[in-house]
Every structure is written in C-alpha cells, then in structure tokens.
Image (cartoon, rainbow, N blue to C red; front, side, top):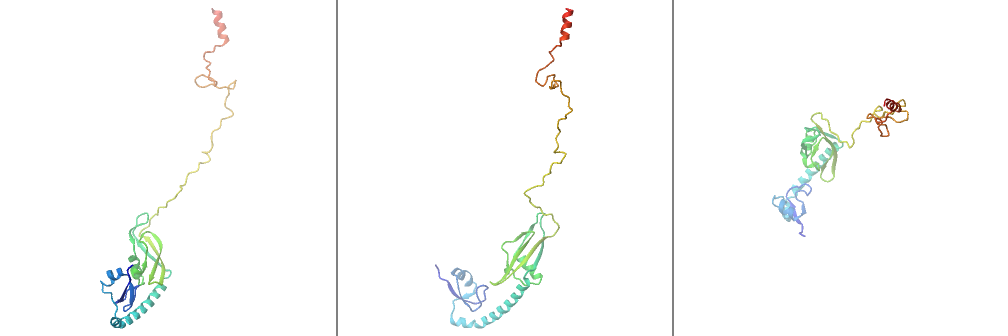
Length: 219
C-alpha cells in the first residue's frame, strides 16, 4: 500500500487545512490535484516560516467566517423555502430543482448560502415538500423545509387499490315469487303450449266414449 504524502499547503483548502499547514494526503490526491494546481509542495523549514504571516491572516478570516456561518445556521433553523415550478397534471416538474436552485432562492431571501452547503441527495423532480440539510464544515448543520409548488392549479391523480362499486338497490334484490292464485289443473298437472301434459304425454289422440257410441249406431 502506497504511503501518504506529507505536503505544505500554499493556500487554504476547505475540509483539509489552512495555508501554512502541513498535511498528509493520499498519493493520488497529491499527484492529480494538489501538486498540478500549485496548492501544495514538499515542506521545508524555510517555506513554513515564510507562510506564518499568511496563516495568521487565514486564521482570522476563518474565525470571522465561522461566526457568520453560525449566525446563518441559527436563522435557518425551521424556515420554509417555497419554490414555484412548471409541471404537468401529475405534478411532475418540467425541470428538476437542484442544489443551485435552492441556493439561489436562499440568497434572494437574504441567506448567504453557497451551493456546496446545500446537501441534496437527488434533484427534486415533482411537486413535493421535502427536508433539506444545509451544512458548513462538519458541525454547523441546519434542516430547512423546501416546498415545491405548481405554477397553476392542478388536479393530482391519486392511485387507489379499490374502486367504489354500486350496491344493488332494494328493488333489484327482490325476486318474483310464484303466486298462490295461479290456476291449477284438476289432477294437479298443467298442460304446455304444445298440448302435452306435464308428464310429457299428448292427449290429442284420446277419444271420448260418447263419440265412439255415436259412430257405432250409425253403422
């Protein structure tokens, strides 16, 4: 495993150190960022001594900056930030709300917040109310409420797992019952429209005894 580089900072770098500080950094960070940009170099007693005045100025500036940030954090506690954006009928924004949008709105409302202090995991892409963290350094933190509103009145579509079903009315629940007054045959068996009795036998071929006697007398 490669050993860390020990470098002297030639300028103040946030979350790393002040100008004149001797810090240890990863080799890749040193070779790819600090050294090519002339932000650091190998420390020597002479160079460290030459940066003492610059370091004192940086410390004074840092102290003043911290006091200002503490005041801002105190003012931010519990505030609600409202952003109005164009969206479709489902509340999906045509342009997402980003860290820069929140920072710009805070500056408009009198809070000097740099975009890097807005901790937003993902851009806001719909009409919503969301908690957003504002953080300076490691210990100055405030939570604000960001409300994204539509630029017009919309009807939000709501998904429902169940739909309202019409209940049957009392009239629909009633069924026709056979009437007790319906005519019944002498034998208790009715006839169908085709001349058959209920037992399935037809009585068309059955002759009465009277008609048979009259026919015999004529012969």
